[in-house]
Length: 432
Ligand SMILES: *Cc1c(COP(=O)(O)O)cnc(C)c1O
Figure 1 (cartoon, rainbow, N blue to C red):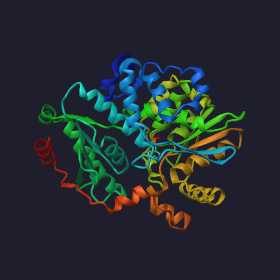
Figure 2 (figure 1 turned 90 degrees about the vertical axis):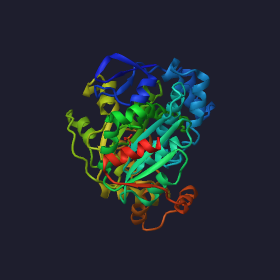
Figure 3 (figure 1 turned 180 degrees about the vertical axis):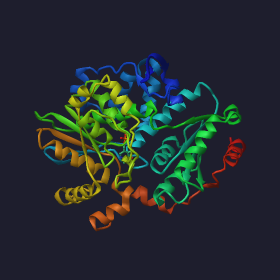
Figure 4 (figure 1 turned 120 degrees about the vertical axis):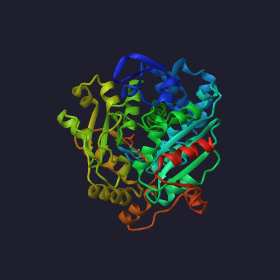
């Protein structure tokens, strides 16, 4: 497999380079040169395959000869070791639960696959790799769990003191082993600034092999296409067209769905579901792309005013608005409507959905007013990740899964640190 930058389709890099670099120098995004089709025989026979075997087939088709089959199989099996079940709410409404991984959100798929790929490619170099991640909460948890005990890789997570939830903090600070949490006496932006400076510091980069676990890394998108196949396998589609409703922020999940469709999965259309940060639904309506400063909402993992994967979506559709609107429909909802949907789904189906999934549900219902389709809503996080909001919306306490309850008992271990770069640098040089 080779990859090009969305800003220069004529220059190619290897998968290894794209994974370690994350971003091309021209500030575009890496895209696979080809997204080949799977055989119709395989697609018609999904039901006879396990999730891991589907994931391997899809990965092999995209990645091709960049990784020998035997190694790729090990990578896939290590990364995709939890299920993605579909829950049927009614004949035309399904929920794809993507929260069965260690950090209880779909980002586990991407983070675990990226960790496996980096570890694999890093073996050739035999040099310890140090991953720096700044987090406002969620990404750090998925990355920490994804890289936990990964050979040859150490992870340093910078998080803003007092600005992440108790459970998020526990996810970052209780693993130990190769994961170290730095509790920064500042904001998320301060954390990000420290990381950026570290990559530009020549003393540091000469002594330590630094890398980032950026959310736009292509290795995070590839595994996100696996579960579209896995979901399709689990439904009885009858004669209706199948659509996926994707609660979106940076639009990585939706872009991965477009990969799955290109590979031959018969998806009729995609529904781009957003909160008040509605640049993409606006674009789909007006043809004008107008980034906005993000606004804070209930579904805060989708509070993005300038979605990073939009460049990839444009690339797929040859920058043509018409083509994109033929396959993607967009809808946006405010927090009040979202809260009502959470309640309605609980009362109607006895199903507890989180605010992100609820936005997806609302969009599907809007879409189904004009099109007779069977819909699958991506449930991107477990509702207990938003315990306080869920409790107040449903006016009752919601049950906490065992693996989360255990976390609150564990002891936090973090290194307190100021926002002074020299301090941070010294600490890195002493410890790696
Ligand atoms: C990251 C995230 C999203 C947004 O996903 P994108 O791929 O950035 O569109 C949605 N829901 C949850 C819970 C998330 O953590």
